Length: 162
Ligand code: FES
Ligand code: FES
Image (cartoon, rainbow, N blue to C red; front, side, top):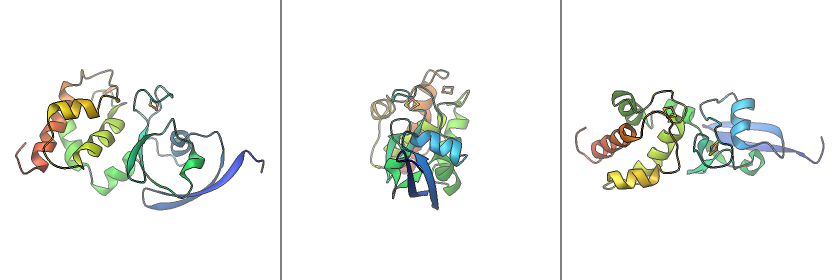
C-alpha cells in the first residue's frame, strides 16, 4: 500500500462496504467500477450535468465532485437503493407514463433530485420544480414532460390525484 491508497468503510444502499481506494478515485467511479452500481452516470465530470447525482448522509451530491475517501463512515444511497426500497416507485411510474425519459442517461440523477424536493413535503409548484432541477441536464426530452411528471407526483403525495 502506498500513501495514495486508503482503507474506507461505508454503508452503500444498506450494506457495509470495505474497500481500499486510490485517493483520487471519485465517488461515482468507485460506485460504478468497484461496486458495479452503474445507475449513477458519468457525463460532464465537472459538476455541471447532474448525471452522477447520489445521496450521501441524506443529501444529494455530485458523485463526480466527491472522492470515495471522503465517504469513509458515510451512508451512500444510489438510484439502485432508492429503487429497490420502493421509495420512488410513484416517481418512476410517473416518468414512464408521461414520457419523461428517452435515452435515460439523465434519469437517475433527475429522479434523485426530484425526490430530494418532493421529500420536503408541502405544496410544490412548477417553478419550484424547475429551480430544483436546474442543475440536471437532459438532452432528449425538452424538460416539460419531466416537470409534468414531478408535478403530478407532488400533487398525488399531497393528497391530490394525478
Ligand atoms: S458527471 Fe457529475 S455533474 Fe456531470
Ligand atoms: S432522457 Fe436522454 S438525456 Fe434525458
